[in-house]
Image 1 (cartoon, helix red, strand yellow):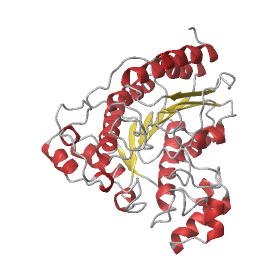
Image 2 (cartoon, helix red, strand yellow; image 1 turned 90 degrees about the horizontal axis):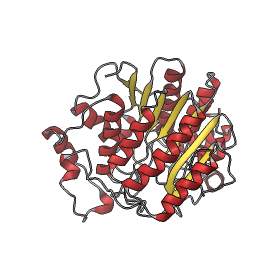
Image 3 (cartoon, one colour; image 1 turned 180 degrees about the vertical axis):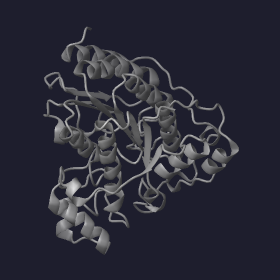
Image 4 (cartoon, helix red, strand yellow; image 1 turned 60 degrees about the vertical axis):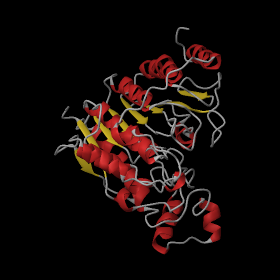
Length: 375
């Protein structure tokens, strides 16, 4: 393993839940950490326990009264109606729960620490599966995201003298919070592949947009072949042309075929191939998590992302300890669904290859022309 690779995690995700009926009432980060440990992929010196971002660090982007409202909501385990309406806390999928401030602040602490390690040259590759809360707004919670760790990480990198940062988002949902915050900043390239017509209903293909803003909204049923074409013919060349000093990748797993909150059709092979392609560019890189609402598919995908970054071989079959761990997971939202054996015994999905639809091929050609690449 490269000595410059680090994994940042925390036990807060093991005990913290958004609520019993929430899509995030599943063990995601903790299962990823446990799988990596069971496979022997987190040796001493690689795993770092995440700090919690301070209010002062958070207000580099977020409004102070919003940060104070989050802290007060956690302390009281309640929020008044006026503050709820103003800050979108306690509504719209953003409940008040036990660690409503500390949990997102810990994810932000991880991304801020990652930015420090990368800017200082202490690490070249950092993985924080708890990060990727790309919907968070300056003064409001949005889309299960109370704070926006990608924005904070990018701002920290810029504050530390990094001149150009590329942000690549492969979540099924558009990175509206990141684009709103940084979409007009020429120091930041934002590239997103996401499902068209899916909440938050932003990120349209725009031929008049800045070359530093690359939105690729895809139709439902996106397969591995189509995703690879978009990523390798548009996203990777756009990143190379931008010549970033550091790259941030939001590695949400909700574009997978087994996820309940999108209608895309990817296997985790597509995500791993994308992460490998960006990592292979040789720039310092932070990779975060993001969406993902099937506990088996997201934990397996994120564990495979770590293998991709850290250079581990993915076994054809998981050891018995890992299989036992996966079989012990529960998913309250889909009690009656038949669970395929592959969810318990392997990390790798069967490929979801398929034909390239005309709309995808056309978007590739138009995108390449728009950002100045050869057709």
